Length: 469
Image 1: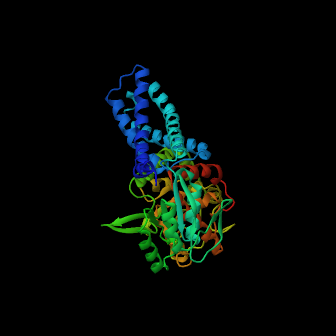
Image 2: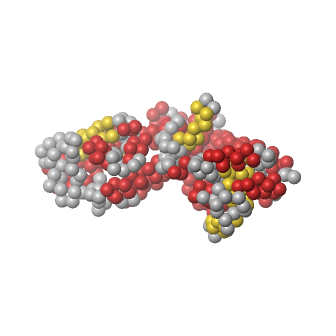
Image 3: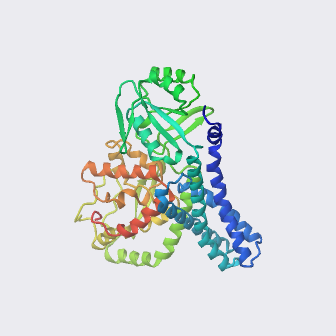
């Protein structure tokens, strides 16, 4: 008989993740209260407001940076890095709010600095305690679930690999059932047996009291799938169906419903709801700080453009922005011409249209600096797929499947493709295909930490690139 304690644990396991949301916020406020008490500072209204704002920001930012995923001991340093970077984002937002509201002078600097240093350490300790607690529960047999997978094809193997790669779930894979595949399936240096056909699975699940069954059958096997589902109703196993949507190129896929009808988003923007607010806040804060820092450089470059060649200082060109709408992108003029027609030749090495000073600007990417104003007006983001001229978009959208999915988000000054070397001239189609591949990968992997990583790598690599000319 299955241990009732496990059933209780399974029934309420969702509470653990939600408690972690609450605990993170409570720790932030509690540390602030304790530091005020230790320093002899009254926890007056202004500190209470700071605690409330920090509480809300912690939940939102930590969710966006994927800190509410379970962690394994092997990823301890990654955990520490994620927590500290997420906390830095929160501190930056709080400092910006304090500057705008002119309330920063009302706080004790000793309290604030101590609080900012201690909080990430306390959050790391908290998460480690949760991790060790869950590991202890698994050792007591309270969170160990037996699993079988119906279907040993590509989808079933993907699913099995995820089960094997996430031991924190406490799931023990017993094997596969399949009508066509026999023998063993090799996964990560371990072999998992094909225990029989789909008809054999029902008796096995009943006899072994299997807790969970994953159905990973292809969409074309609809009638067979229906038979299996009906047969599994005679068991007490929890049954999950994994839709065979890997045949599509997924982009930020998610499960939703429309008045009770389940829907799978095959591609959707990752910046929906809270994530969109966080992304916009990141852009506004960083773009404002950067423009303040580089303002003298902007003036010097503007003078250089004006004095070295006739024509306007700023070059404006139509590009595709969010959802494929046209936007006007600003750059320092680097050419003798300002082309924005239906046919625009890409810049090539030793291009006669590029001015000497413009060539230096392009090689150092300094011609892109005016696009921080695009970031402020909301037509661009600091990180995202680089915008292409409208003429180039219309050409490549017909040749590269999924090309227009790049426009599910705002275009960026820098991007995942650019720091991996896929920038500059795309004289062959394969180069543009590779650029698009990295752009879509960015959309799938987005987090605030990933944005910060790209920005840091841009600073280290992006100002000098052999493909920029």
